[in-house]
Image (cartoon, each protein chain N blue to C red):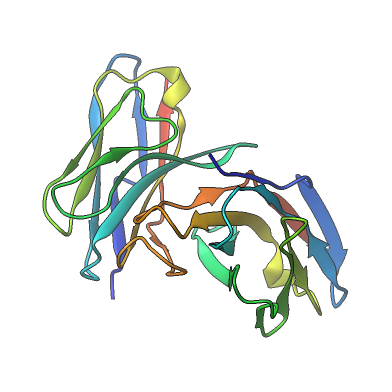
Length: 114
Length: 116
């Protein structure tokens, strides 16, 4: 019963390097999300995908790109990492993104940019 | 845009006592959904409780209950008989009813410590 799986769990980058955070869910959910969590800032939405084939910007999209590869997978790419992108990243999914439905979260990726 | 404010960055409670975490939100909408999520040190996000704004009755889940004051735009979480396992970050969140697929908007969180 995997739920939402994020890889990697930890990553250290140098400024300017690129990387992709992977996220996959096995619950047949339509909607997927990427959040970042910083101390004292709560969770802020980077991008989301309401359904396969669609993506939308959230509150803090600058410096990131996303790909909804298929219904299961939603990746987050940092093209040129900056120290300001040091954070914990969470992928989440939900059935339809409406109503009082629960979000299912991955276990997070701790990213440090030096 | 909707905003969610948690005015208590940190709270503490004695084991077996009751604690209330505050949350206020700003919206012009009349119908929406509110949530409390818990994040223990494991970092896993866990849904604690949820409330539909059109329901006047406050939601309860075992030791967890809310005080929903729609006019005041307040949504506080009460934890009764606090246990050591309740120590965590707690996030209040808002979702619009009207905008189709609308992601959750989270507050900045309250760190709860439970003292044995």
